Amino acid sequence: MPEVLKAPLVVEFPFTRSLGPVQSAFLTGLRERVVLGVRTTDGRTLVPPVEYDPVTAEELRDLAEVAPTGTVTTWAWNHEPRRGQPLDTPFAWALVRLDGADTALLHALDAPGPDAVRTGLRVRVRWAEERTGAITDIACFEPYDGDPAQPGGHSGQFENMVTGIVAHARLDYTYTPGRAQSAYINALAERRNVGERCPSCRKVYVPPRGACPTCGVATSEQVEVGPHGTVTTFCIVNIKAKNLDIEVPYVYAHIALDGAGLALHGRIAGIPYDQVRMGLRVEPVWTEGSRFPDHYRPTGEPDADYDTYRELL
Image (cartoon, rainbow, N blue to C red):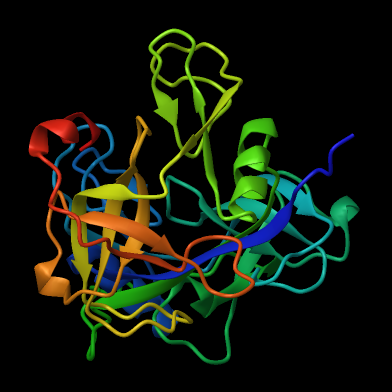
């Protein structure tokens, strides 16, 4: 049996979002230990608030404070909290309808165990000690057996309103390529590019996918392509990526390797960024011990005619 390839991969990026007046008031309110919803024209109060009525699509601006106490409408127990989750001990994910609201808010519920959680359980907000204007200003919910809290009728007007947030998105997973991509990766270790030809349309796909995305039939015939190729289109990158030791600006391009029916992407170097162009002929540059080309550089050949790569744009 051939070795099954696998590798841990992490996709991580910060997502910066500006806030409209409704979300700005909601998050600023959390910073001030105030929970705000928004009223619809038919009298419902939505928490979390939205800027447009999900039923009528009307714009919503009528803010209303709701209580920090509420009722669990449904829940699921989390036996093994993951990195970045609200609590580091087992807890319940719960939908909580706060008193005065007509919709439920999803958040963590701190409880000693699943037997202590039920639909209809009364809970209250546990505020974070340090609040910055984010949903995490609600540290979690906790069971509560007292009287419903009374909202103070806040208007939603605060000083130093929160106008934007940065959400850090991250996905950790283990990638296992199939037969076709394993063959492609193993060939790269030998500094070769290997694709697979569709038995129907005869296109050669690099990297191979194990099936033709156009015809929907399985592919198995291996075809070596390149190493030279043609830049079909490109972009100039002006923002430096975290943990990527490449000075900006640089060029990232789609490259159609000779004999391939699909363009792959790669970085272009060895030429000023403002001289990269469609049709530029390039070749891979490998570094010692690398399993894939570090970048592509011009070969010095005349530019390819547009008609030879226009179907690969």
